Length: 150
Image 1 (cartoon, rainbow, N blue to C red):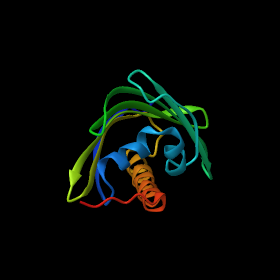
Image 2 (image 1 turned 180 degrees about the vertical axis):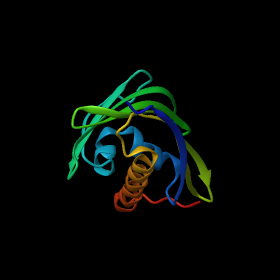
Image 3 (image 1 turned 90 degrees about the vertical axis):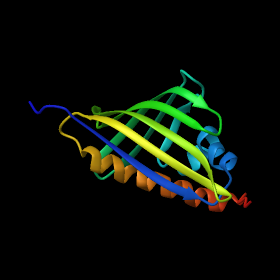
Image 4 (image 1 turned 60 degrees about the vertical axis):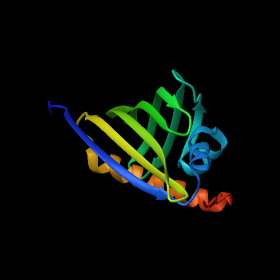
């Protein structure tokens, strides 16, 4: 049996939208469903709350189960989540999302510490997935039409 591995990564994005607007795209279930990809089955965005999402691709069905551990409005989200493919969990992660003002927009910093349970696409797969999701967030923010500049 292959041993588990532990990895971490950070992705930073700058959005032209104000921090409150970027925050609302994460904290509002209707908005999050528009950019997060797949289907948001449940979202209880409170400390101790849970979220469930899923999507399908050519590899099969992917299911995400999240629990929120800290929420500081417009500043920080700390969450833990698992990713399963075709019913088998292959990564379990602790993630922190930080929001900061940046030249009239928002600097978003996503940091993830993960336990990889083989077989898995590992850190490369998770980083790729979050790059895609954060790109979807950017597209949503542009289309949402509430671009705010200082």
